[in-house]
Length: 269
Image (cartoon, rainbow, N blue to C red; front, side, top):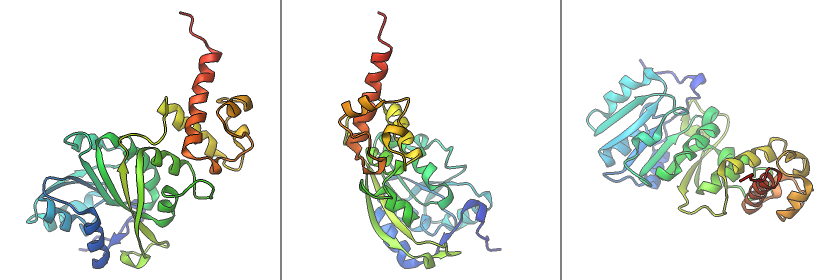
């Protein structure tokens, strides 16, 4: 019996052969690649990838999809299926070493943002990532400062990755068709971050705080982390809103907030 897509899993199965071909060509898999696919579904992308690599891992939450996927891929290569929640999965366990893991997937719209943040934790182990995502999410990731799409996701992913939108995919390429279009994205870890951040957890905290109420000026949103004088000392106008600040400005603010902590609570040694 054909598996019906489940709304609670955000399932929209890819079915357009041309789009599948374009995706596989963009990934350009080779034998020996440490390839892992998130949400293989019925195997539309899995099968051509496995044929080229000979071996790959997949992470699938829906256990009812596993038997059919195993059957379809049985003669194509070695497929390791991890029946698990990708949001909690340890992708580091699949990496043979730093900069080796290649991650791909047609990501469910309802978990794409938290999943991208989860994967960013493994950036040192990743060679590249290719995802089919809701077009609006890709626009946020590839945005530039100054527009409504520039936000927390833009800043945090661009700190770790180079992002490139490759092509758009219409909703008719899926079953059932989603209500929005998608886009195919490539993310490549940056060996050296584009800005100097002294404490990444503070950087993440400050960016989150700044965009939690994005209509506020940073003078109002960063209270408790930096006062107006501290913001000015970082070279930033306190009257600006977060969407106009670039990556360097957020790094300068985060570093300044650390210095403020040091000055407020000097060492007693």
